[in-house]
Image (tube, one colour):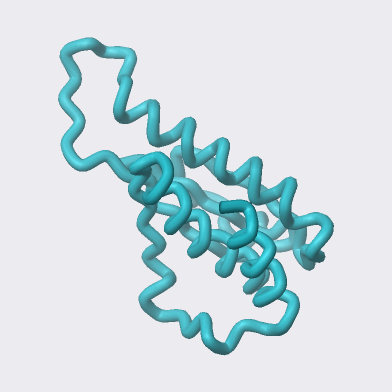
Length: 125
């Protein structure tokens, strides 16, 4: 298992000392125009962490149930984006993404901008 932390640029300092395999800073308040490039970067990082497990440097390593666990402390638009990436990457690439915070969230309460971003990501399929 590998871990990724997606955090708002304004909240990074409140997470000093926490350990993750990778940390990605994202915009504090993304727009429909700016979230797509960030989604692409997050997807690339998830893919990189996944392949580090599937094709480890050690040829004798055995990886059972590889997955990437993504923690989040950023705008709701990123929650919508990650849920969508979870679905897309599982369907298209077989990449398992675990979103531990998703169990507590209610995506039906997303703001209109988040819903629009989710719709645009759906169109990429």
